[in-house]
Image (tube, rainbow, N blue to C red):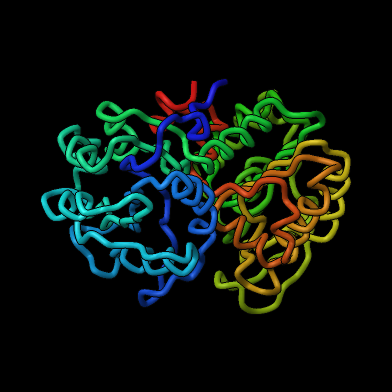
Length: 392
């Protein structure tokens, strides 16, 4: 594998750089709730500023239907100013005369944030004309948005037909660390949680050939338990996912799947009310499985304790509710404790990172990916349009 790294680029001084970042952060009343993606983007931005490049930053934010001021990228520009310690200009559109005029006035070392790419429907359509309009703003294209590189969108795919393309430092690190999962030091343990099997099926199948154990929790486990004939009550599950789970259990993959030996149940979907620990055979039709139980945590801990490579994606229960987060937080601590030395640990997915942060041990994990769907796609061997011409 060869990554066309920005570090290898020649003659960046004063060049106009179209930096496709992923700054799709959660907002509340115009305020940034979580700056993880912004902080992760800073090394590439600082690298470009060392060469006095004119940096034009482009990102999407949310899923706007037309122009939505609540999803303007202007608050991102203000946050970047604080973090980088220098002015960040703002363009009220990402294409057209106004954007071109602002870029034309930039001096070496200037930074300009473009308005939300998805205010234009052509972005998600991978429209070549729209991509060409974006490319007029720059001399060089840099993709630092691994989290959207599985999308066939204009700013990550079509634009590379019109500009020389390079990988940003964050994207380079994402790919390099994910390759350690595809070529792991053994034994490798995968921990899979979250809701739907179908979204993680390519990953499960691909990792099954490389991993020694797949520890399952959350809604994924409910489907597998139902496929084994257990009552799961009113727990989160899906008939199609149960069918897929049954097929996986009958296949060679099934030999590596380890399911909860006890669960924590409640009676309310919001996680309120009394919590009880039960073995899977004792779950009632009125119960809702909301966490893995203490014996499951001990079983999973023994497996993780012998691993040399660990990947975790997806919470193991309704961790938003305080008395149903013990399993997820225990796994987070185990992965962090095993990482950085004894094993290579990689964590990805928005809710998974949120849970990891609750432990205060996020910096103990070798690599925390900014991506969710893109991580699953890359590890599942799916197409990555954003990496074409950049990763070979």
